[in-house]
Amino acid sequence: MKRTMMSLTGVAVALAAVTGVAAVAAPDGGHETTRGSSRLPVQRSALLCPAPTSSEVGETAYTAFAPQGAAAGEDGKKGTAELRPAGTVRDAADGAGGKDKSKGKDKGGDAGGSAASRTVPPRDSKPVVPLQKAGTPVTATTERPDAPALVGSADGALAPGWTVQQTTSVAAGAGRGLLGLSCTAPDTTFWFPGVSTAKDRHDYVHLTNPDATPAVVDLELHGKDGSLAGSAGEDISVPPHTTVPVLLSTLTATPTTNASLHVVAREGRVGAAVQASDGKLGSDWLPPAADPSPGVVLPGIPKDATSVRLVALSPGESDADLKVQLATPTGLITPAGLETLHLKSGMTTAVDLKDLTKGEAGSLVLTPADGDTKTPVTAALRVTRGKGAKQEMAFIPATRPVEKRAGAADNRAGGSTLSLVAPEKGKDAKVKVTASAGSGGGTPVTKSYTVKGGTSLDVQPPRPQGLKGTYALTVEPEPGSGPVYASRMLARPQGGVPAFTVQPLPDDRGSVLVPAAGQDLSVLTN
Image 1 (cartoon, rainbow, N blue to C red):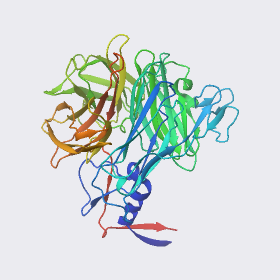
Image 2 (image 1 turned 45 degrees about the horizontal axis):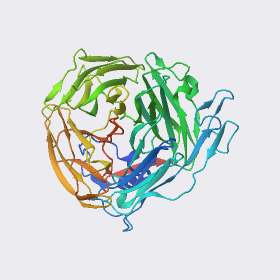
Image 3 (image 1 turned 120 degrees about the vertical axis):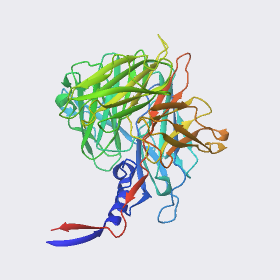
Image 4 (image 1 turned 45 degrees about the vertical axis):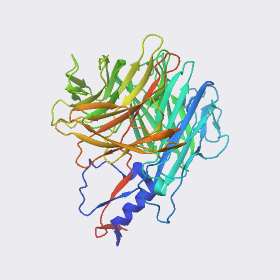
């Protein structure tokens, strides 16, 4: 047996350089527990944006941003950050991915193009929203109904906190509304409570592979009685640098209004997001929820919400009992008739909370009814604004806390609302919010907020002085702050419809704890 000694510092830095934000900068709860460790910016990160819309009357804006403050790369260069078009695998008949039940093959599993599927290459490979420097966002727009998915990466000083916002406005038709999404980092597992396979919904999960090797994905659907998809969602192949859209209703013969989707990459990694379209309520993106945990926070229910639906799942082997509370500007309250919520293992539970906020903005906080219980859960909200034929929906998934920093791009002169919630009584949150320079000009502005423990705060965020174009927001907890969660709502009315979209602001995982050089890792190899 041969014994090889490796520096743990070298291993950690190498991982940061190769795998980027999502893989190495796991949450640490705000506690730097490794003695002598230092926090360093990641050196590389990756993002994936799904194909925005197939509507002939849609317009999509991309906004890319990286906050200032990170050092340049080891070679002294500032770094690069850009996205490029990906190919699309579509069924030859209807454009959906998934299984070809008539032949037992994946519709999109054959990169060369089988009788059931074809790969549509991107029209060009020009970079989209390439960043030149940190601190100033860049924008691009497209009206193409065949606009492709995008894949890309950032390195050097542009890697930490790199974010891209995809915002689509569809003026009419079945997919009308405002669709917003913070482009996702590739991973191997994603949770989407709140999906639907009902007749009035068309939900597509977009699976995008950023790598040079194929990915193999399983899609697991859970309804109120348990598993729905069975073998129909297994072994979906996603070719390299390609996206596969899968219509969820093709995975089950049982139409289900409230369901939960688990995306698992058994080989490789993918980015995943769900585009939901409702015949009456418009359309929006359902972002992935935070990894299941014993308690979850869903920040940013608007004050004028006309209906709120909670969809939750206990994905493990144990049932879960949750205390349900609404964090308001004045404190935590219990919704009438919903002191606790019981979740059966593997079964999706949905509760209509109606006009939960009653004219006052708030955030939902779910905690174990028994403080010692550690059963993990996941959840999301479907929120509706407006009435009758003038309704619009958006989704608020459970999100991670802001530990070091979070960001939101594509803010304009008006229409943005920043939601901050400090869910723990007695632990006030103190945050610094910075409005970046505008994409066309302007001077950054910083403002501090204090959120009393057990309350939620909705504010109109600061704007750059002399703003031209769009700008980004950066949220940073100050030293000594209690836990804080955040989201950003964009509101852009369309012909009397209160069109809106909500993006959660989880920690950007732009830094990683690196052990001191004196700490060695012994690796034994044969």
